[in-house]
Image (cartoon, rainbow, N blue to C red; front, side):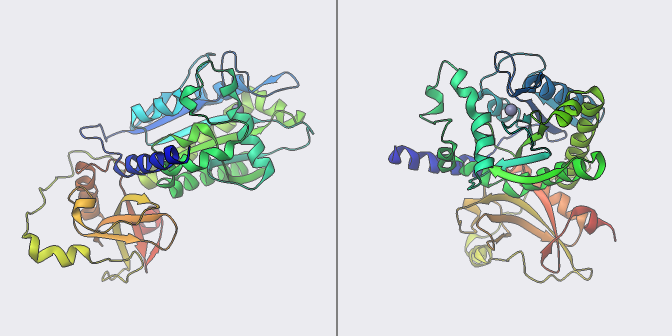
Length: 376
Ligand SMILES: [Zn+2]
């Protein structure tokens, strides 16, 4: 098992890092909406409230809102009351090369007193209640005939995913950002009780190759909240909030590459002359020459692995830098104080095979939001 696990680590790190796809349509922001459970898998049932129905209704409502925006492509893992194997959900998202994966669920607990929303990303946890949520959501594997693909994973001890969850590491910050937006809007605009952004080992989140979250809308076990979640008006409000969070995230991270950006073939330079330059690490925290103090870089990858900043490690891209101040090291391409030029760099990075690359602005060496960077 250990040997097998090591192999897997390497494999997942590799695909997380590459995530390459040439010739894909980068003009649309692709959202996968995953309504939890379905068919013979009812999910949580309390007071006659059924999770699979509520999750589906909310997912469909979110989709309806998002589909009004023609820069968004919505992909549903299910649109009707059908059973989908847990494994197939991330597969759908990966095949679609989605920009985000959003799984929608409802909570439940035996004491029937807890209430509020919580939004999860994948990760290890010591919290018994977080683990319990993951266990309940992973439980569907027990209903499936072919358990071979789960590779010995025991849904009753979800901690075992963590060893193979390396891939999501690359999307950790973005997943947290999306999850935080959901929780904030739920609280500020829909007046739900915020239990916050949490992490736990969910099977459905560990295989996706994009930022991924799992939303627990609330507790069906707490009757007043169950009533709200089961109501059309409640579902409308929650769906609006989720759609708003996704669109806010899109604004921050997604720039469609259209005809306005002219891709220039990178100059071929003499290898020997540039070798030392290429290796120079320009840390994200480095001071900038910009008068406004805002510098744009293109984040092309993030990984727990430290990689040498040479073009051969980054599909031939040069002018690389990294930020290794956290456990997940971020790798950047280019540096400019001109946003239009940054978009050009982004186009180059995508063209080179980093489809999920995005622009990151820094001010005085600190990462800031795009909106803030463009305010001036
Ligand atoms: Zn669920």
